[in-house]
Length: 288
Ligand code: NAP
Image (cartoon, rainbow, N blue to C red; front, side, top):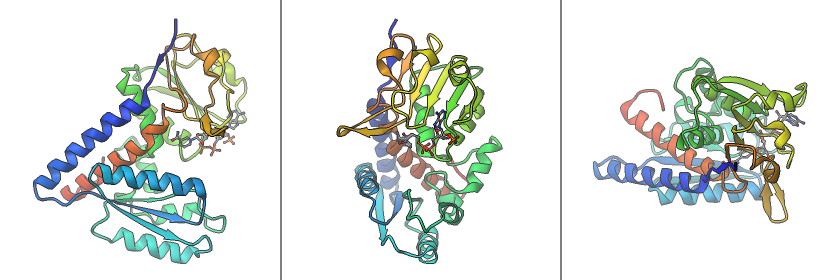
């Protein structure tokens, strides 16, 4: 047996094509194109590349893209003023503040300030709370990307046992909620979990998001399980995942490669979130 390799690039490309068609239909009916604004604070080189890629992808599907940059020493008060301006800017449907922020800025304070109905990456705690209640809400692009990959490959979710390794706000926690809302029985693991391999071996769906290259080997995987590798650690000019592919591929039923699995989905889901927010704002209802 060898795992089906989940092609995130292809799924993301199909999603972007669908979004571009929806935007074209929207503008043909006289609506303005969805607007995405990204705030980039400071001079983190990787963040600058991510933001540039987001801008290109947004413009390619027909969105209006707005980049707001500010210096690394920008005060929290000034950053909050910038976010407040975008919250009330009628041309902006989706708003994202690129992380990490400079160390003197508390990301929670910024997340609190993003208007929930423009929250393109599910940062605002009101949206996280809605998700926790099992209600519709914008969620983070990366966890949504994982869900989309499972659905695209018809991986059974309802009734399955899912294990998520990692409990960050960016990935693990929202993904555990999304899986729960899709009727999986979910265990969230972290650095204090006892017998991690044993817990992981119970999983029909195993998601790893720790950033520990190669840590998940065949000893963590139930035969036939779907293994979603969110981890990305830069190495030798590329990125490596949390999964030891050589050992896991013969055991798993499905496997996301790194690169080319979850990574390409993140921007596609950000675009889809923004389109959903734009559509909801036009209908004046709450979201997604
Ligand atoms: P993070 O905030 O550093 O969280 C890492 C999580 O892993 C924490 O919950 C931590 O547990 C857990 N962990 C660390 N060592 C562990 C161990 N030995 N056993 C079990 N759990 C352990 O990282 P993140 O932001 O969630 O990102 C995780 C990875 O995903 C990184 O490689 C990141 O680059 C990648 N990522 C990729 C994408 C994408 O688009 N593909 C997007 C976002 C993130 P504690 O809570 O106990 O410390």
